[in-house]
Length: 167
Image 1 (cartoon, one colour):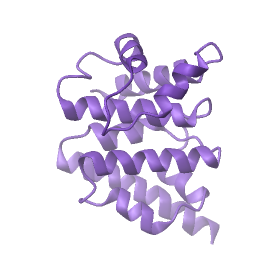
Image 2: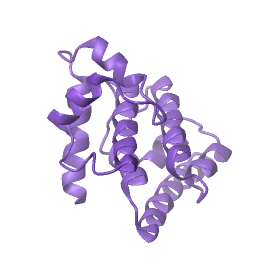
Image 3: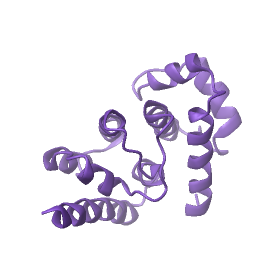
Image 4: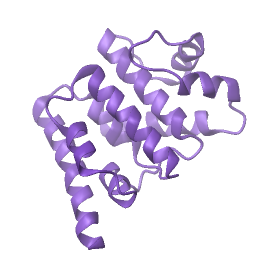
């Protein structure tokens, strides 16, 4: 998916879930989702209206989109800030370096990566610190190893740049 198109999809998801008119019960159901459990019917209703075609092409893709929607719901209504990269948000909220290393490691694949990203969403939600969810989406949706490495490197560089500036 093109970067611009992914940005538009993420903005739409965050806007709809964070909207005052989005039912609180449905938002709560989306917040409770995990990649290891079947999603509630609320997710399918939401997905058919707001997710891009092909979101359900295979089980991994489905779990990735479930994770993205759950993470954005966890942080709503203040989830998505296109101007704040994930590494920056984590550094500014004193996210531990050890946790960041687990999130960005090569061993964090599949459900492990998804669960770690949901933990990041919970952490940042508790700190009221939105971030650019396009980076979170790229962490999950990118299958090409080199492109995924570039996403991880960008997050790490942003994290350490902010840490260095605060010293």
